[in-house]
Amino acid sequence: MILKYLINPKPTIILFFIVFCVVFAFIPLLNNPQTLLLHNWMPTYLVVILGLIITSFHALGLNNLIYEKNIIKKDNLVLGFIYVLLSTPFYSAVNAWFISFFLLFYINYLFESYQKDYPLSQVFNSSFVISLLSFFEPNIIILLPLIIISGINFENLNWRSILVVSIGTLLPYLFYFVYTKAFNLFFIMPSFTELQLTSTPDYTKWTIIKKIWIGVLFIISLFSFSELFRWLYKKSIRSRKSFIIILFYFIFTCLIALYGTYESWYYLLSPLSIVIANYLTYTKKRSAANILFLLLIISSLVYRSLITI
Image 1 (cartoon, rainbow, N blue to C red):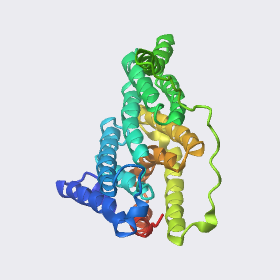
Image 2: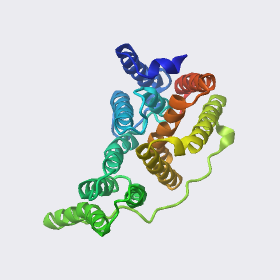
Image 3: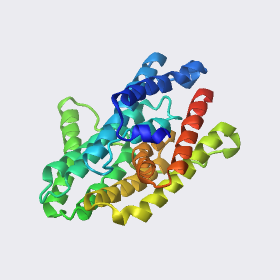
């Protein structure tokens, strides 16, 4: 059905994806945009344009990254569509959009360290990116141990790598410290101590369509993780090791979400999209996959159009 057109896509499908992203981004304008797309200083139209550009570029960038690294070997646009659909409730998460986009570089550096005896450049770049992003989202520092886990998983961890991680992490803070001293400014550290579990959401206030959307997402995620764990051992060595990194990435972003704000849940989209796309691409139960994908599309479009706050 739908999925077969997204695997080994033709140019017309890529064009359809672009049109879909534009329509999806502008849907919130139909329903109370002044309240829904409210930002501290950014006008409504700019929030919509940024949402369109960053989300679509992120979706395509993640899609190409996973395909080029042979993590999902079939050329497809399934991952791109899944990422856009999962972004449904995040209509004005401007800060999370930017941070999540730059995390693409971080995860790319981790994958590039595969089969390198001394991946010092990749280790430095990945730790440097995390350190920079921690100025804007302190909890993002939780992703730092993933660099060490990646070294263990790819069997190239050594004392030089650990030293380079320390240097890459401390360097932005050193530059910031020197800058503040040079211009007589206050050196303000990010609030790493403010790690508190978010309050439990009030499920009784959720609308029916929101419950349906989350229910569909939960079911498709359940199938996706089940499929991954059952078939992980049959994947190629590179794909298997890469998915181990993705699973740990998912766990760490879950921690960031639990200890962060509502926008922090946006960081879950990248690893979750990869796992779901893997299921929709490879599962032998094509009918079930197509039905779940269609339900996700319909519920996302309806939920996106009916969001009021």
